[in-house]
Length: 453
Image 1 (cartoon, rainbow, N blue to C red):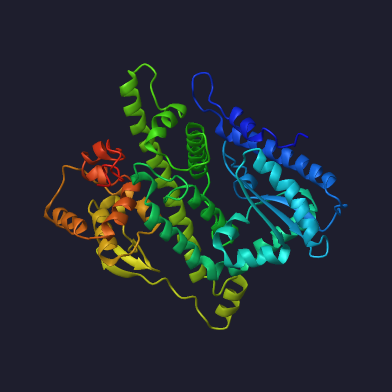
Image 2 (image 1 turned 90 degrees about the vertical axis):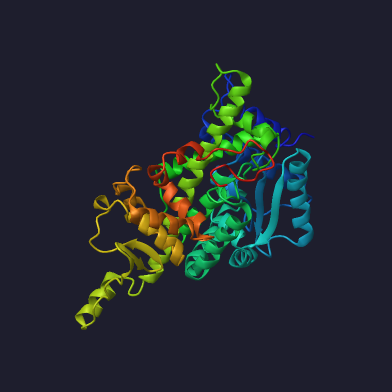
């Protein structure tokens, strides 16, 4: 007997193909269509499973839900399905649960789809997300499929509320997870064959940003950030099509195909030149996306940390009451660490009254202070440093000395350079830098891009 999910994997691939010109267009619409098809087939599969078991499945007390990329509407051509059965302990016994689950999982496996599945009570869902950070972030997006949707919504709401209550304690864990991934996978813009999900600036960071926003500690960015995430999802989709499987690794054999599907190759060029130049353009695209998502994560995390610092007193009513009682709100504390540069709440900011538009060496001083003190430059300050009147033909003794100090910062140099490169400062110091920026290495044996070397 045919199942509702028979041929679903091939249908995903068929509806994800590039157009007649070989270009993968309307990626967002394709992801929406794949999600809708998956949800429809899974709903039908649930109905088939309920009819196929040897008992009557109750209308309440058990439900079927999607989490992860399917719930977010980001399903790729070969993405796995993250599915969960949520039940109340008295709704079904263990034997009945197993029988129902087998009617769901086996047709999915037989269809060739990758599956991440679980069966849990509401209490078990809460326990897992309380102690497993990746599970918690995945559960911040839940989409009911069938069955007792009220139970699913109640469970999802409970997990979200628990996340918000614990967010102040879990913020360090959240940021440590990003640091661990950075150490293991590197930065998206500097890796010749990157993991576009796990690398810094990748899809995992976009989920982390949403988790920070869901905590109510900080709002998430929109506009060009959303565009960057959608474009990176396009890259992920093209990797799936080039590889023919679920993978996030942009390996050398896939790069020319992915670049062509993204429309980065000029069809009028000879084939060998077309492949070489399109891979360069692909690396440039990934660098731009990775830097945008990384900056957005830094900005969101910075606002979240500042909100914790200032949340006492949290509300204007208590501030007013405190002031009437004779108390005063504490003024911001700035510790000047270099001319025009100050330390404030663990970050470097512009000292009060400093105008970057009037100081050509301010960006250098901020970079040196960041490297020597091991402190990040505040994201808003970083953007303001773009206003410094920097000219590559105007180097004096002070500038040269500062630049040598910057290069001597040791391990801190990479993070500092990456932050100022996001706002295009090094290319204004040295136009030659732009010639190697974002250039992939021709050798597959090299892990890093030329600028990273």
